[in-house]
Image 1 (cartoon, rainbow, N blue to C red):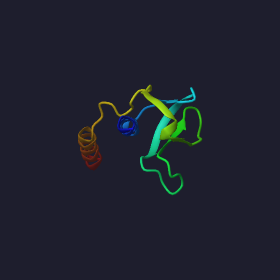
Image 2: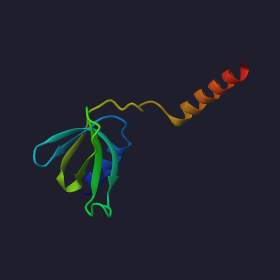
Image 3: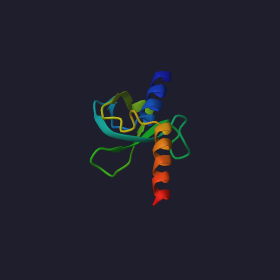
Image 4: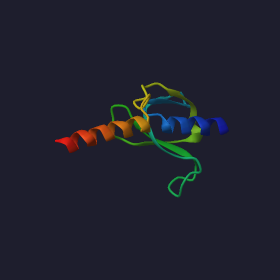
Length: 99
């Protein structure tokens, strides 16, 4: 369970598609946007929430249903850091101020 929790945290921080491999053999590809490692009042069991590819639906999957997680899509934030954004924003602000 500790390894699953760690992988889910990495998947939550990942800015690309993941594939959830479920214990019943199904695979779900999409973007993981929420996780509750301790469950919640809505669902007492730990769960993840994701938006499947090509759908605007939101799907909740219990940790107990997950057999594996694969990082299958390109991480759109790869190589982009907060520091780079700050520098670009300062340059943009200076160029706007000159106009």
